[in-house]
Image (cartoon, rainbow, N blue to C red):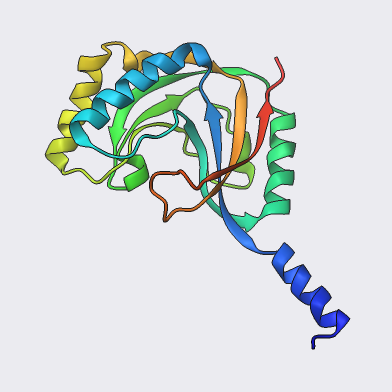
Length: 181
């Protein structure tokens, strides 16, 4: 039978457990239909999971929940609502960045601790180079002005990630914060 000290030590270790986290900026509701139309058109042709429209601000941070929540709150307390825009459509070899919109004029407050790579996820998957080229062209076919979409960011969300779940269904939203005007 473990002693009280051993039980306390085990409880402390559990509390210090590391998890993967991501910070998302959520697009406002008035632009969601436009974003979803592009995402659905891409998924219909190229497959991939249905994903919630979001701008990945930070991804894949391995940290304790307590530290992550505190830093997230601290950063959100000094950010006000701001305008951002989709500058261009890009691809990469990574599943979670298969096709995405590069976000310009974005607050870089989180860079103090983590590298910042804001992008509007449009399609998850593994595509060939030819499929990626077609997918980029498809965005313009679906919405000619999408690569110049502009909107205000008013809300950030902290998510606990399970990178094995490529559908994101098991990802947990830990905390959402509305930015001050």
